[in-house]
Amino acid sequence: MTEILILYILIKYDATIYKIKKLIEEKFFMYASPSLGAINPALKKLEELSCVEFESKMSDGGMLSKTYKITPFGQKYLKSIISSYKFKNKAHILNNASILVCISDILDDEDKKELIKNCLNNLLILRAETVSALENPYNLYTEMQKQTIGTNLLAIEKLIEVLQ
Image (cartoon, rainbow, N blue to C red):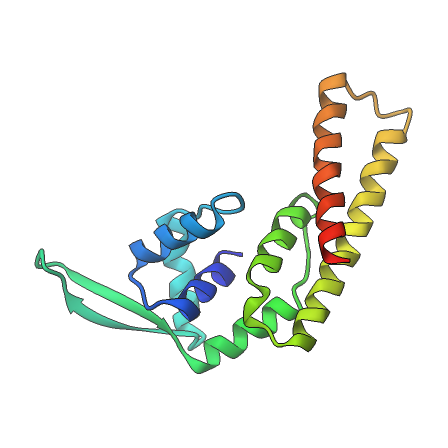
C-alpha cells in the first residue's frame, strides 16, 4: 500500500521523500503513516520500475535533495494496480478499501466501478465472516472483545453503505 500512496501523492505533487511522508500523514492519517524506512525502499522499487524519476538539487542548507515526480508509465501503473487491487490479508480489508476509495478520484468511471465492485465484494465477505465469528458459540469472546469486533463491524457496514 505504501507504493500506491507514494504514487498517488506524486500524481498530485512533485515532492522530496520528507514531503511525501508529510503529505501521506496529512491525507491518510487514519489509515497509514509509513516511516521513511518504508518510503525509501518503495521509492527505489518504483524508480526501478520506471514509475518515478527524480531531480537532484542542493537545498538552501547545502544538502543534496531529491525531488521525485511520477512518470507517465507510473500514472498508468498506479491506475492499473488500484483498479485491479488484490486484497490479500483479511485484517487489512477495511483499511485498504478505505484508502482505495479515497484515492479513486484518479480513475475513469469504468475503472472506478471495477474498484468499487472489488471493494464491495471483499467487504461483504468480511462482514459475513465477522458476523459468523460473533455468532459462533465456540468463540468465547469477552464482552470487550465483542464490543471491539462490533465496532469494526459497524465500520464495515458503513463503508458498504457508502459504496452501494
